[in-house]
Structures are given as structure tokens and as C-alpha cells.
Length: 233
Image (cartoon, rainbow, N blue to C red; front, side, top):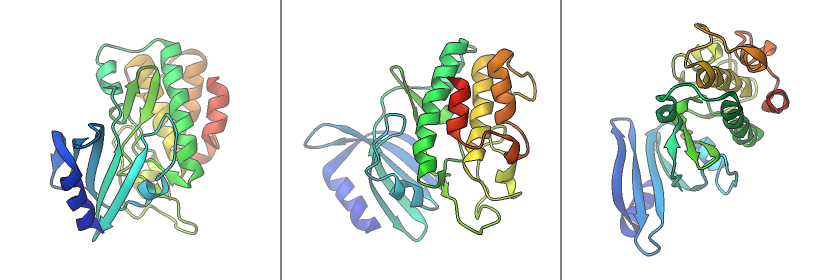
């Protein structure tokens, strides 16, 4: 299945640009030979379980996943090409206005709501994984994502980005949607102040939202992104 998938990719697509290439995997921009449409090919080591759950899911705040193949811990994914600017590039110009930051956070909550409804956790919510397509924020890259397993005490593999990852991602307990809420809270603070909340907490109502998102104890955070959305709105 995996080898056949890559063969069909080579036959039907041409590579336009290599976006990332490491020993663990890579990302390529492809163009379909017949239609001329652009797509993204991802290859990484790990599990494709979350990508499979996203097959056929339509949400404007998540990329559409078209096909997934796996073999011996290797995963290949064909997904929608989202044309836009990465949020981390935008933040190089300085913090955003509160309404801009709030709007981006709300849209990411909508994407996370869909993901969490599939019993999946992103585990790597950060500006580098957010694309701004016009006035839409799109959460990308599910390579670190996992499906929550009943009765499992900790994550099988420790993954995440330092500064954004919730404490439980380091083997304390199994992650669930509240880990993404923690990361989103950190990112909201960085959009507002340019700094991690441990260095400078945003002021006002949005600062209180950040504070609740980033509680060390998951039980003290918002129970779900729906509760977070209520406060953001």
C-alpha cells in the first residue's frame, strides 16, 4: 500500500518545491499533472492514525486530507495545499491587535473542536503550524498528533515543542484536548505580547483567558475548546 501510494504519486504528480527534508521525513509541494492543482505530500515516521481519522473531513480551519499510506512506521500523506502566510512570520512584525489575536484563536478553536471530536489531540499547536489564508486561520501538521486511548496512563511517545507543550506531554499523564488548550493559551499570549506568559502575561480579559488555559493542572483549565470559545466570544 505504501510503496504503491508513492508510485502513484510519482506517476501523477510533479514536484514543484521541497519545503522540508530531514532524516525523519519531509514536506513537498506537488502539482497534479493533469489538473494543474497543487497538493502537499508529507512523509514522516510514526503513526498515521489521526490523518486517517481526518480523511474526508471538511473544516475550513483544517487542511483536507486526501489519502494516507503506512508501512513499518513510515507514513505518507497527500493533503490540501493551503496558500497563506505562516503565523510566526507575521509575528516577526510584533504583537497583534487584541481583536486580531482573538479572531485567530477563535478559528483555531473551531479546528481543534473538529479534531477533538475525533478523539484526537494535535500536541503541537504553535505559530509555525498556523497558516493564514486571507481571513482564515488553518491549523496544519498532525505528525505529532495522537488518538486518546482509554485506560492508557501516559502518551506512548513524548512529542511537542518546548514552551508550547503542556506539562503532561512530558510523561506525567496521557494528553487529551486540554493539552491543546494549554498550547493555544501560550500562543494567544505570544500574539498579544510577543512573550511567553511565564515572562509577561497579557492584560485584561484576554490575559485572564490565557491564565486559565495555561494552568499546570489540566483539571483547572477549560474543560473543552467550547468553553474557551465562549470566553473568547
